[in-house]
Image (cartoon, rainbow, N blue to C red; front, side, top):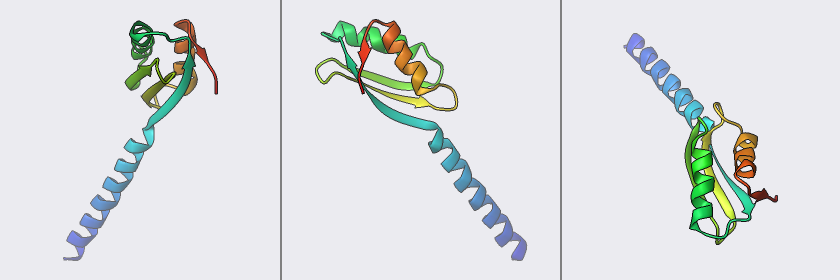
Length: 94
């Protein structure tokens, strides 16, 4: 019984750390973005950001002037996402 209890304890501990490590990598950020006037602008920004490795999802919103992005911070930085918005021809203010 001692070996089984020890094994279960180890497996439980490893699964907790693995779960925390995975969730710690995914970030969600809202980036205030100006210059969008229509759904075409939204599509332009979304297409540009989706090209970046590590992007999980992106939603541009021209009405509320923001871009919401989910990304893996082990693969991409927030600065790279912001630069993609700028490169697409839009402005950031924070």
